[in-house]
Image 1 (tube, rainbow, N blue to C red):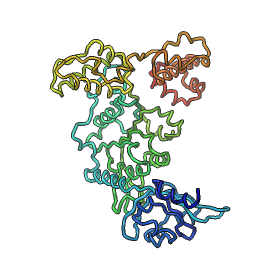
Image 2: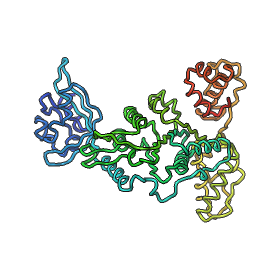
Image 3: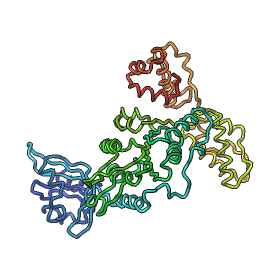
Image 4: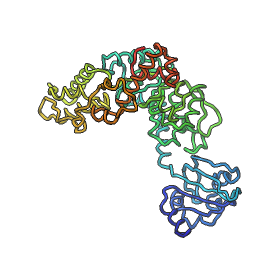
Length: 478
């Protein structure tokens, strides 16, 4: 392929804008995506000086800055105007171009964030106009502890711990699988605390691009890329109340460092600002993954985890809460949903009942509620929920077992066990199998070390806190 053809392919087929200049600022390459983004024509820009077509960039151009400093600028938000006055909002990454060790130009890759910027501004404006009370203005009431249904020791212990921590201002780290009711606990903690009448704000860290999460959390000041006026972030809007961050591990590590500092010092600097703002915010972090694994995978800073987990609250999965709990929740949902739909006398068939009590419920309480609601919707004039009213994916997995029998392997070298065959024959999930192995190994280590957690942690190459977390998660008795 000739050089000219290659450049034409780049111009037409890449979704990101690309702009290449020489060390004097003359444009050498400018693709159609960048032209559309900046409201210009490729011919208007090619072979011309950068500031001739984009005069508002003079003194602010990241292309020229990397040429001057020999340092790349990555994921940099930028707002500027073309020669026709059109506003342009981008996230740019810019690198110097070298030949034989000498800088000869720079290349910039840009992504249009105008629509995302508008969404962020609407979110921040909404919060500012309602004094930050996102959740107080909802059409439905927040959950309280009485809404968390259950009588099993696991759920009662979790509720008791949550009630105790509600009376303090300590940060809480809530861990649990999807559908276990983590946000119900977060809302209940807020409602049970002295901050009940203060703001309660929830943000899912995975719901927004990482490049804009900082602006959403800390706000912006006049002149920053999100607009020409000051906008308070969620931290400021939650002042005096509670800020809940779901999927905390989706926050970039670089932002986690700033977040950690804000937690420690109870003050932060808005994006583009010079002055620090002091806040009084109670933080609740939520994750549906093992935080120690996230730390190992470098998705969560260890120091941030320990700072947030002053109190570590584990919400148990439904399958570990026992059949009596599943029966209690099933009866509760049948009664509640039937009443909402104006139906009476709804009951389960024996086969449907047997299935519900034996199924492993990977979606937990949320899945159980949805299955019951779906079945009642399909009942018509009937009153008995039968197995055929359940979703296909459930009926397909009707034979899943909940227990493992390692007896025949008790004196066998683990390397000689056919793990795949075991999983296949027992019809269990990989996560169930690995959890049982982990539980057996930890129990063995604790037995060998006379229940000394510190010594067992050394044997297993874990920190003491890490082993204690696993003991709590697996509900082992020490």
